[in-house]
Image 1 (cartoon, one colour):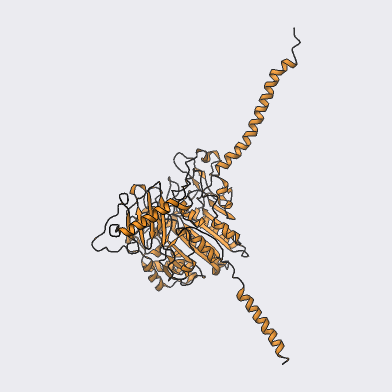
Image 2: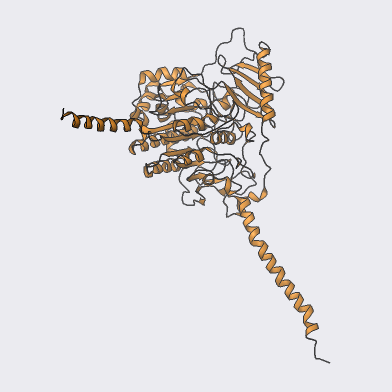
Length: 579
């Protein structure tokens, strides 16, 4: 019996150790969000087109979850505001248009942003690339709003090579590239996409893994540069796409290819740093591509209808995928509805953070369980937008889509961006590029499963027996069964007046509770010619100038007054002795 005591003691130690290990909290995962700017639905090859191969993005998508019903607002500023706040733009006054670089407004300072939640939970928070949520005052800029660091630009777009922005022909060209609050003059001549990719790799390599990493990379690509030279890519990269006949699409392919290379570099850096197995990587486009019109990059949203700026699927249904070893049921296509506002509560849940968000059914919802279980329904309501200035609304519920009115007088309401199959790679060449890509090698993609996933992720416009009924949204509201008719070709408003009425009432209710748009008119004092040809927080600069000028003015007035007094008083106090 005396031998039993040491044995029991040993068992107690063993069970104590294993008990502690099983109950210890897991380390919080790293979160990496990569955003493409103005990337078309049909400009990633995991959606079926082989004209512009995106092997790294595709490999990530095939080994993760392709989000085939990922929705975002139809424009840049509203889309980014929704991501950062977890709220729908109409509920925070960010629903109308974008922040023009000379306008004094931004995302309200009363809003708590995504990086603030993560920083409070012990994350190191990093932003690379575009901001576009206001900079007329320093308080609106990234490092004042939860990011530990920012390297990139604070306005809407820049030249890819010299990083300047010229808003219009009457505006001075100003530099817009900063490291935190300081202008970076040294980066001139480096292609912007390369610059941001290198910064992401550097931050990952230098990251102190005592704290988890929250990294947001918001690329310029493939948004156009300044209007005098909109399509920009290194010539050697453009030459790789000589099989594409359209010269604009050829440059676009090179721009997207550089972005795709960056995804590979980021994933590889995470792997080398030993961080990849505890990381969530999200990739998505902020809105659809502008195929034609202002800032057109020739992108394709086909076969979806419309493009950026509009109420149609080509504007709001965006390319997206998520990857993580923490996800179950990967290697599939998800048709669950996800809105960009969902990412704050969803990624917070993945990180074990209490976000404590409250709002209506069109605000952000935690989708982490739905991402892990394809049988869960998740979100059923998506508000695309209500724009009181463009006079349109676009809203979805339970698979129905309501469109009333349109933008830009219907100039972008058609189906655009159909591609020539002769300009595409062969399936064999695509497969070679896929498996030899950085992410393809790391994830060991299964080509048989890839073919199945690509078929499921490709949208087809269905044949409508008896023909289609056209939609003229400026005359009357339209209704689509978006599950059966993803291309919005058959208006069934007259067939289902009950659904149309219900949807219209929902929109009216949301409109009544919507916040007033925060937009402000242009301020001529924003012009960079006043600030050493840089775009900066001009209203703070003006305040500082006034603070200096006021005491100086007082001093000048005082000296002038004393001089006048001496002139007037001296003859009285010291009368002349001359007779």
